[in-house]
Length: 138
Image (cartoon, rainbow, N blue to C red; front, side, top):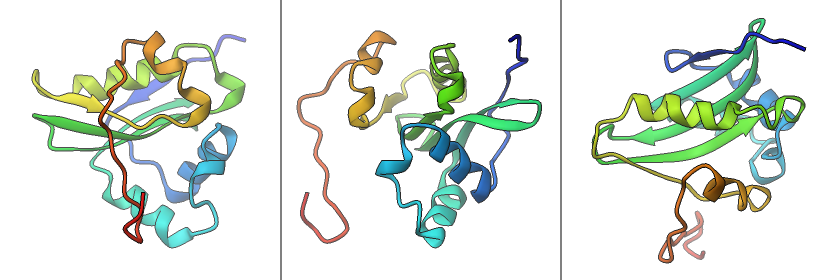
């Protein structure tokens, strides 16, 4: 199989494409897949996308929220499991970083299944990350 991977930081997927690639990755179990309004907001309010397509079909996304100069929260990194282990996730992060200023730091919270992946590609664990859910409790 010799696919031509097409990467872009100018391509915003549709809500349907985003949901579809989440389902084909390992992230669907940790995302609000049954909440169409929430998914639509996730797509509409992200201000930096890196995408990977094969023959027009979305097979990977990096969805970020950023100020482009100091911090970039990489909210979702999803790659279709049929295309896993081909460097797509790493390339999506490189594409994301290419749009950031020299002082910007990429920040993420790992899905449990990806905890071992991020150190392998250069991320450092941070001991003081905190979260708070919508109801005010972590």
